[in-house]
Length: 518
Image (cartoon, rainbow, N blue to C red; front, side):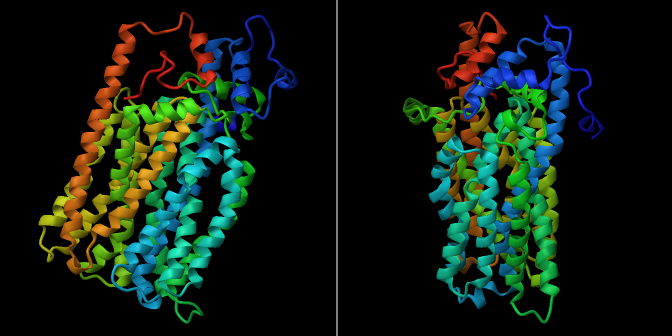
């Protein structure tokens, strides 16, 4: 923290200049740029940075990275925590008479659980187009206000149709958070740093699981209320989201080029840091040829299939944890309390595997290893007798480690797809498959199989195995491509040429200096 609080006292200076350039000089230099185009501004900042001593830029880049880590990451973590908490409200409210009060029958609850992902499915690609065209920070900030209002509206519905409609629109709104954060992470941190930073903001799913369970537990104890206990959960979470919207609107950056927490020189250093990604910053123009390339690139289809697998797994774990634990013979209050350790499993899993994934050439193998705790838990749910109910609950906790393969899988399009239109296209379609998986997953839980749901457990085991197979194929493919480019000696004569080439909006296939993260 102390590093973040210090101002960069020793600042790099161009080799030909004895003193640090003043802030106004950098602004004057950028005055001729098309400031509404982040990629053009980023290239100008990079060209200016290349005039400075590289060793000093390296030292200053550490200070810039720490400032981004300590200021931007907490904003992303809190926003994502609220996003997941909103999704989980259905799971927690289900323990307090939600289905009875809204007259749900049969598979109605499963359809309501899927409704949010129908909305996400409808909004996935339009959001990615919007995020390419509009500032990310401002878009998320304004969206938070609307999303909070829709969340509170869930306390006003009284039947299945109303609940389905509200959850649909909430999913459509929240559909921008994950792709926005993937794009923002790719603009603020290097490819080697992204897996851990993404793990940090997605690990807050675990925090929200703990807070949500405690919130549900506290709401369950509230008496003499004008509204039902399950409605109180939606009102509290919606109010929290609305207040947080003001913070995001004010402070969340759109990229390194306009981060409010950085001064002009630090923004230049921030752009220099991420220029090594070979991806530029952001390009507003939609390039049709990149959409075609995305459609013809076989690696993208492996990403989509992996997205579908993690979606199926997430849809089941997020919406049926309460039903499973309650089915082991626990009361509603006890069920809420017993879900809190699962959140701790997710936090530890996401951050722990995120650290491992930062090591060179370990992203793919880390995703595979992160699937193993979930597989072990599912085997336990299939084989352990129901009289050992706390052992079964522990197997449910292991399912929360799923957050790690999810977030590391989301990292792949951000680090391995270059070309702004191609990346936006791949991320958008990836989340279409992810949403489709979330819709399909809950329907594996058959009402006639309460409380063990053996069909669903076997289906989830098969899904984990498929995810591992797809990841192995993808990793081997990327390794082969990297080696082929290395054998051809595809490198620029000067490093500066490679860095500047990243701002020419080339795709990972067009840019032969690009290497895939494995």
